[in-house]
Image (cartoon, rainbow, N blue to C red; front, side, top):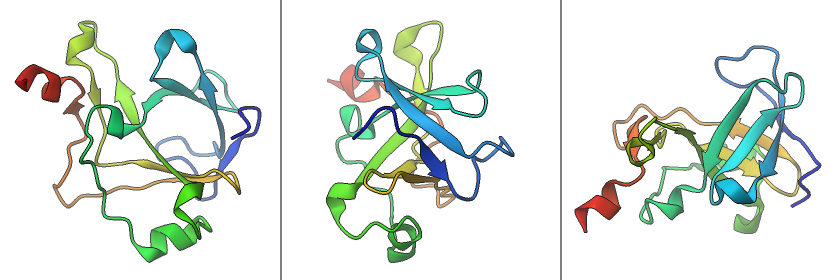
Length: 133
């Protein structure tokens, strides 16, 4: 995936009217976290992560309509990330598993899904699985 390319959120980015183009920026010091930065307003940025890093059984209910809306025809073109909320005490940081970001990595389209089925939390502790061990 070309990090210089931006992804277009066709229906906009929830809560940020007018912002449609975002790019993913990798920062080794944040790994495995990444930045999702607005091309139109670089001050608007989010920390995102692959949810499988802390929730290996994460499986949002993606429909054919979700896949079709992004033009995803093969699984390899799909990348799912979630927005992270960093806390002052890093171990208390959370991720929004109820609203995953779907990326079509071949056509550079993206969408944020909003699930309200109660299956996942908007503030899922990132380190909860670790603490339970």
